[in-house]
Image (cartoon, rainbow, N blue to C red; front, top):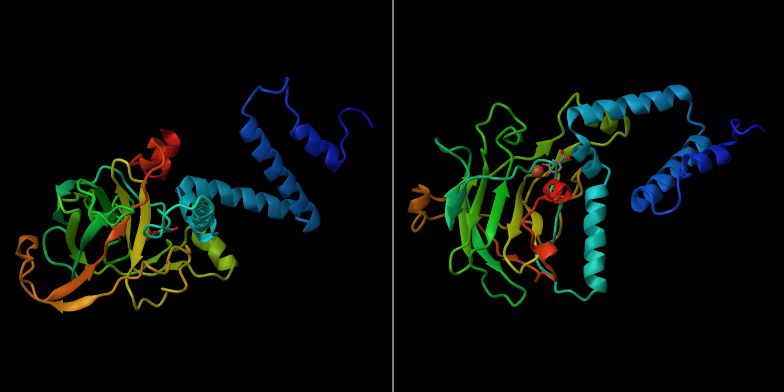
Length: 308
Ligand code: DHB
Ligand code: FE
């Protein structure tokens, strides 16, 4: 055969052959790309993927990228939870103390939400839905309160949509940052959020229909919690009783993160949050792991880390 006629194996070798001596380019990118391309070649071969199927897949990927929904697909196909499972396993191997379970960040975080000390309202203006106050403390591995921790919290609106991604909502609606007080306490008022569903008609929904999977998440509230010397905690808490509590399309629900609701809590002591009738309270303490280095304590969400 001439130099330009290839078997599949020869083609793969050529794809993965560097131009120059070792040490050029990015070795890690090279290694991972070589593996993924090899795996895809094998998939195409073993499943006898035809040209129409292949180009339909690339068209779908183009539309997925253009729609900005890459983060929805990674969650729905289990990659986000996979990273958490691997982090949990690494912690166990290293004998690290357990904190509040981590749960996926999801694709809908926005940095820079308004900052308050100790308490705030996430919902603005008129009362919406069932009044919720969530309160508790941020603790370290020894159970000691962490003063000045930053609690970054966000959740969906009544339609299951997140501000910023939903042009109908004001900037930072249902997104706030709270700095814990000297006793490590935080509290906020909002309303009980509903569940979330992937946008209908989107590339993500298209794949999930083809897979005969639903795209629903149970009602949840997201947190990023940061403090100097503490490992950044990314987690979510879930409202009990949701239909999808044990069937989350993004696999983000976890034991230890399902809240206990206290409906009918009297309003005394909650006046500063504008609460003047019985409401639903939830109490939840977050336990942080001690950071082993500066990198672990950086208060950066996942994409900010990548770009830092
Ligand atoms: C997705 C949506 C969420 O609200 C979330 O927390 C995680 C993932 C998603 O659409 O993939
Ligand atoms: Fe979410």
